[in-house]
Image (cartoon, rainbow, N blue to C red; front, side):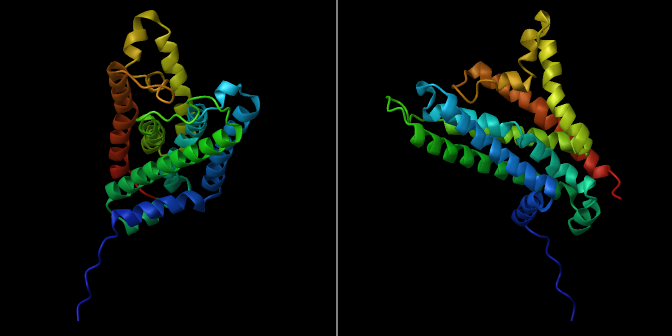
Length: 248
């Protein structure tokens, strides 16, 4: 009797595998713990040091989401570069020869992690507001669309990390360049003639207020073009590099 043809694992299973990989390494485990600790610290500091008017739900939600976004891109970078730093790329691509499927699973895992971060931000914001409720009107106000904007913000920061990791395939330079690039863009934006054009490509400026207010149509256009520069372009370059890179 002939053996039954092997079936390739579904994308959902590959995504779960990528999520598990994030806690299998010490770096991934402690980094995720650090992300959570930073979010908790933001709530505690705001509760102890903030003014009464700063103890509203949206204040906590904005603060915790910004705290989470500080380290989320590093998780995105490690999600890709760990295959090379841990020398598991040979095993991964032997089991799943279609490298695009592996990268698709990593991208989906990054989105899932971003949504988990969103849920954590909401939970911590509820706890912080309940403990320090100032009892003023609008304390628990959550404008329609606010959660969606923060979800986009956290997801974008994760995907930027994935894109940088895919381009460089090395965690150290990817992390350094990720944190230094906004400084360079900010310096260029300080030049008067470049101030307006940089609004279309500087991701940090384009998304500066996405956590605390609703954006205008022009601001959304800035967000769209900047994310294309920071996510789509490097991700396309990274995918091409991964497709043709030699695995050792």
